[in-house]
Image 1 (cartoon, rainbow, N blue to C red):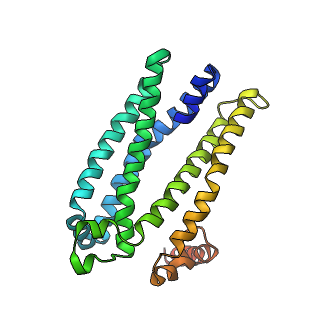
Image 2 (cartoon, helix red, strand yellow):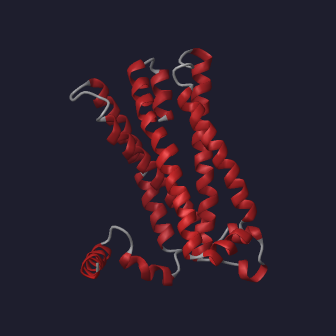
Image 3 (spheres, helix red, strand yellow):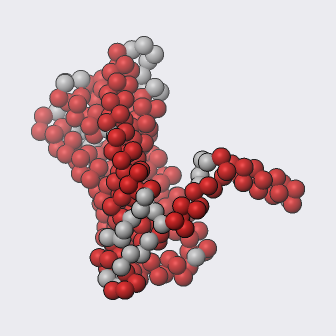
Length: 239
């Protein structure tokens, strides 16, 4: 969205700027409401299901989680400022400052991923940590960089897909604004296809074999759907 805003500012295109603002409104509502609810839900559910595992991870990654908390708070403040100041900072140097605010928001959002991916990778492969129990050995586990490359490209693609989906609600059919928006977002998503494929292959070949065994019941696979249908039937009969 920040890229859209910068492009609209550079081309002096107020219609595209207004489109970016409307899309930001939807993303703002989602991140500050649904995002907050799901975040609390994840912590609540994991604390109930595996309290000792969460406690162990907190001991290993105390400073990482502390820094992530600071990054998250900064991210919330930045998205509030980015959305609420959009209409006020519309021209000249103020507009440039607003775009810089959006860039800063994007960077801090990525920093959250940088930290969390280290913890997720450690849960699958702890690397040298059992031997030296070093904080940096835990962070830079064997899966960290491949997973970060995969998730970064994936997140960029999904971001483009969300914007592509939303712009159809804020533009008229056959309008020049819609055509330009679709073309711009499509190029953005295509630019991340090669990094996504490369990251996926790199990530796949670093995942431990015992984790790959769970791939058959991963989300959105055929085996998972068959298992889910069987579970639904059993629950329906039981209830």
